[in-house]
Length: 135
Image (tube, helix red, strand yellow):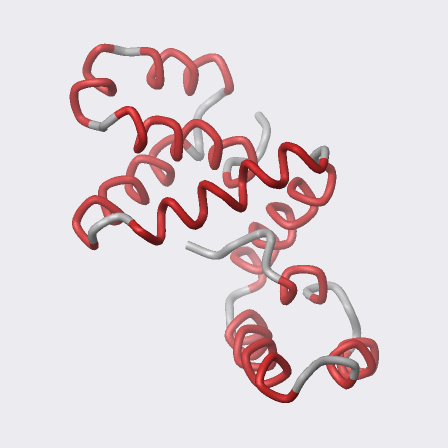
């Protein structure tokens, strides 16, 4: 799952020249990491790129407090076991194509609460604000 708070996300729409100018200002190790992320992005099909751009734009439109919550939940997601991280990722992907009302019903359902711990529920609820396009 890509992180909309990543510095690379801010460069998705930039031209190669703009990207290079931005990268030149960074330490070499960070330059290398961002170039790798941008190369992965550039190799994606256009529809997938648009989803990532949309997520980055939604993240940028959040208040600083909301952005901090998303960053915190990305860290919490990363810290889950591989099995639970996969389960949370599946839940986020399943929520993606449905309306906001349907999403909220699922998140409030007893089945959802049985399948996910309180921490996982919070991760899914917070990240779905950015990861899922508005309907």
